[in-house]
Each structure stands twice: as structure tokens, then as C-alpha cells.
Length: 346
Ligand code: SAH
Ligand code: SF4
Image (cartoon, rainbow, N blue to C red; front, side, top):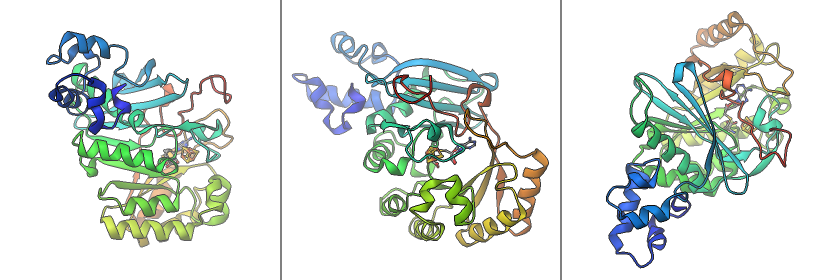
């Protein structure tokens, strides 16, 4: 499975073949991905056949559409049974892929379906990159009507906490940027606030965008919603985010999943505004998406708009995010499929 190899080591897939074969395959994998080896037209038939069934490190188990075909969710299944989900969202001038960095997640945020069903395993760098290559091949060869024929944005907002799988996510970023040709500016890493991970990412050569999933602006409430806050407090998280901003000069974003009566109050808006202004961060408000075990509800639209208004009134940049793919459980926080042997999911 060539995506599982480091791009530099592809020669090993082609033992006994001339060196340029590895270069040709590298082009097909990273620059102009295709869905099937048979489309790798400059490779001899024998090699294409050898790759048949081994190109991707997973099988496509399920493909779902929503939003008139402009949202597509894939459930990929690795040979060991691990589930990997990606969501492609097409727009007139953008195609954004939401990728997973882990199968499941160990961090147990109360409102997140992935967190509710526990942790399965870290994804390999190749499994992360293959999600991107697959979507790229899909857009190139099949496409979505009225949507660019290539990915313009990649967001680590699928299953898992990217900074809890640091070395593999780092290697995946390296391949996306150095081999696939994505600019760091087209990539967003979303984190719940793994402080050492943020500090390491700040020292990498790539200025990727950082999104902080905050959801609460004081330690008491945040520790209730996001258990990892007991380990890395808000003050430590803010300091690490400020360090990232200082080093990378990339505008930070703060993600805020809105829950009725929980974090939609004037008090939270006030505290959030202070943090956002100090970090010069853009705030994205997301109405809670329904998950099987969440008691909370999304606030009414008027409440969300009022909350946005309170932030704006204090000089904060705010966007109310549209929720794509809700009806196919493809929206933020809804990804959760498991192998069936572990966890409760099906
Ligand atoms: N672990 C990372 C990235 C994956 S979660 C993180 O937490 O940032 C991606 C985003 O979805 C996060 O901002 C997360 O807080 C949000 N999210 C989780 N559950 C949600 C839900 N039920 N409704 C709306 N957003 C949710
Ligand atoms: Fe994990 Fe992010 Fe879900 Fe929290 S919100 S459980 S960190 S995937």
C-alpha cells in the first residue's frame, strides 16, 4: 500500500524496476492522484496490476451525499477494521475536505459523537494523507457540479484530536505540503487544546492555520464540557495560542459549539470576547449538531445571532458557521463509526 510508505521510500515498492518508476508513481500518488491504478497510464500493465487492490490503505465502505451532492461523506475501512471518515464540502470557488487524524478520540468532550464512543487507534501518516489523495482523485476524475476540480482547503476537523497523534500528523502535514503541493495556508489544524502539541506545531516550518476549540471561557464550565481542560487550563492554552500567533503570524480561530443555556449566555460572551480580543482571533459559532448521547440542544437561531451580536459589539470578528451534512451525520462532531467489535457504534 504505497500511501503507507514515506514518499522517499517508494523505490522499495518497485524492487527490481528502474528508479524512474518510483518517481512516476510518486507523481500519481501525490501530484495527480487517481482512484484506480489502471489510470496510471505511463506505468507498465504489470505494475498497475500489482497495485490493483493495494493502492489505498483502506476500502470505501460507504459513500453518502447531502446538500444536493455538494457534501459527500466517505467511510473508509482499514484492513484491521478501523473506521476512517472524511467529509468533502463543495462550494462555487472552494472544495474543503474535513479529515480524521484518529479512529475515535480519547478526550471525551461531552457533546461530541466521536468522543462519546471512545478511542480506537491513531491513524498512520499514510492513512491521513490517503484521505486527501482520495478526495483529490475524486474531484479530478468524477467531480462535483459547479465545484473546483481540486481541493482548496484541508481541515483536521473529522474524527480525533490531531495534536494527540503528533508525530503522524506532522508527517502527514509534511507530505501534503512538500509532496502534494498544498500551501500551509490551505490547511487548518483544529485542536481541543493540547498545549505541548500547540507549542511543537509553533516550531514547525509550516504556518498552518490553528483553530482552538474553546466552547467555554472559564475553567469551571470548560472542564465540564472538555475534560482535557483539567490538564491544560485556559490560561495555559491561551499562552500557547499567543505563542503560536507570535511565531506564525497566522490569524487564529476560536471554535465555539453553541449549547442552549450552557455557553450562550451574556457572561460567556463577555469572557470569550476578552480572550478573542487578546488573541486577535476570529470566532466561529457552530450550532450544536445532534449526537446520540448529547442531552444538550442547539440554541434558537435568534439566541445564536444575539450571542454573535454581543461579541461584535465588543469588537470581535464572528462568523456563524453553516452546518453541512447534518442529515448524513457528516457535520462537525457527528463522526463516530466504529468497527462494531469495540465501542457502541454500528
Ligand atoms: N479534536 C479536534 C478536531 C476534531 S472536532 C477538536 O476538538 O478541535 C472538530 C470540531 O467539531 C471541534 O471544533 C469540535 O469542538 C466540534 N464539535 C464536536 N462535537 C460537535 C457537535 N456535536 N456539534 C457541533 N460541533 C461539534
Ligand atoms: Fe475529541 Fe475533538 Fe471530539 Fe473533543 S471535540 S472528543 S477532542 S474529536
